[in-house]
Length: 404
Ligand SMILES: [Zn+2]
Image (cartoon, rainbow, N blue to C red; front, side, top):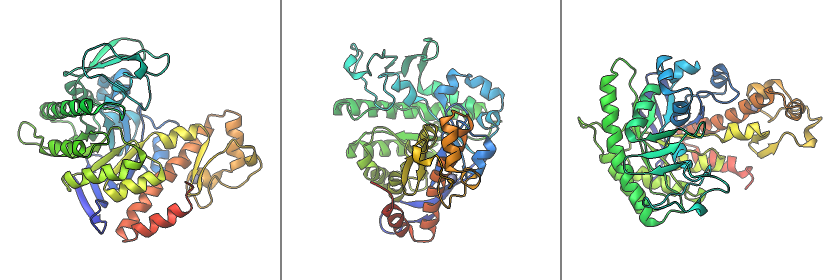
């Protein structure tokens, strides 16, 4: 399923490769746009093709709640449902389910046992909506308050119905604020859940043998602790299904400080099998992408390029700016000189400025096209630089004009 093509010199993990799926190939490293609810907000599938997207990552939790995984299954799977012909990913839903535990979007806090939850660990005015047990996570739907339980088996069943080419094991996400004993307990639980995911995945693969093969990635947790990250990699690499099956790849997840991205990816790349792809969940800042690629991450996803576009923030090689700023009112240049995206080829800063000021729908679309193209193209250029043996020079040149 994965072939390594070119390895960075030195003892670094960075490489180029090709992931093969039933819906096509992904040349890595690659940035994968997020289409949480089976749409990359504001973009048609043909526009996704035009920005160079090789795959789309949707969210199992959101699609489970709405429209329901069985409807996506009936439609022929995620790609057919959303009119996207290329490869697809779904994440396990673990992050969203456990985020409900704190009310925070990015910071998740959980307790070690069944004792009452400490409300200081939740966002102001928010009610705790989820609870972790050995079996899984109980939560109340944020849509209608109905009660649900996500377990490794439920996550696998949902992701099989959604039918993405690459799916993720259900893991327990911790935060940097959790204590070391809690991190250890959560990691042990994640390993037990990984075995349950692999077992259920293979039961479903046999049961649904008329469907295209779905690759299952295990998810590495362990926060900022080197021994826990290495232990997680060893345990997941050793994990076996009913007939000796292994994970097809690995996701590197969980709480990580920006300054630790390269270090943590390097620990994982050293321990994980070299012939399996590694997906780093949730990064898109250029300096983070350079660091993660050099350390050996193959694919990335993040909502940021689209999310900031809808707030009128435009990525360029010289940093980010907000197009609603008054100085762009009569600026008839493209969003970024030399950008090959549809927006920059056809429209001006003055026009985008006007569209955002006037709250026109197409403002979101045009800004998203540019930011997605910017991010995808940056990672594509990293791939070409590795192939040409010029990654370090490309990175140094590129980051020399990136503001810090
Ligand atoms: Zn552009």
